Amino acid sequence: MAIYQLSNDELVSVETTSFEVEQLKERQDIQRLLRTNIAAISEETLVIAEEYGHFVDSNRRIDLLGIDKNANLVVIELKRDDDGGHMELQAIRYAAMVANLTWEQAVSAYGDFLTQTEQDLDAQSSLLDFLGWDSPQEDDFGKEVRIVLAARNFSKEITTSVLWLNDMGLDITCVRLNPLRLGERLLLNVEQIIPLPEALDYQIEVRHKKREERAARSGSKDRSVLSLFVGGELFEKDFKKSDVGLFTVLALAQNNLIDEDAFQFLRHNKTCSFQLLKKREEIKATEDKYKKYRTHLEPEFTYQGQEYYVARNWGLPNTKRFMEEIQNRFSSLRFEWGVGCL
Image 1: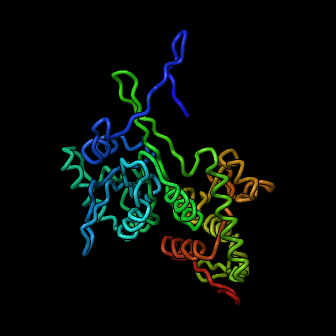
Image 2: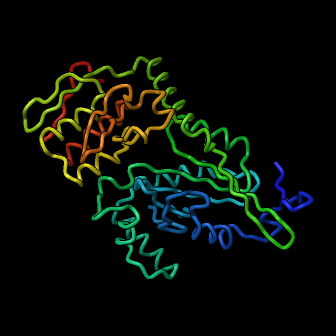
């Protein structure tokens, strides 16, 4: 779609150009500019490394490596090509390579990056400030790896592959970088094309629905039950996975185990892909429509006068991970699976 400059009497067409015509290089220009303006293609992201290549038996390098506000790693790959080459496959390899990156390794990489870019900051303190942490939380760091692909354009093969990979559970964003020329001015149109921002919530719901359908067709849908113990005493018996967050919060509250740090841990936990605790006004329309929170009932938890609903989007893998996180954080809590667990 064409872009125009508005004047009093006419629309002046803004001409499309290319990085090659403008003699802009991939690393020296595009990567350098995005490195210090990363919000243009990935909001709430901190770049911690450039040309990161600390892999065993590999000479490959990630263009930019970052972390987001949820402490997820972000692999950012850039191309000035008109089709994107095979960047999605390359980025997946990189994501696999950094999936086990530790907090200490991230701090070390960020320290090197700060030195290279001549920034007088302490790496660990800067990371903690960005994440809003008082101290390192190794168990919460790097649980997921997101991928951001930015290019002049993307071939149909890439977009089809990315849509399928996202449907299968990956988190890949495609951002089109379109240089424009208006007289002596060089402009850059930044446009996220996958997932479409206005359709993001819908696409997430479609993704979850397809996963559930695949599980049902294969006969692998788990119908087991759980029991929760606090200090060795039974708190709740034989409840469904969908209630694991609810009974965890209630057990902690009734046993006076929720201080401010514990509340923040629970409030922002996204093990089930949705924020564990939300106020009524924070719940999106699609979340409400698909009953991710039981807003047709009274709020389920109150903390310091504020009422919250508890997320219900628990598949078998994220239920197990949530249980491990809770038992590591609160040693008095213990879960047991009922008969029939897969």
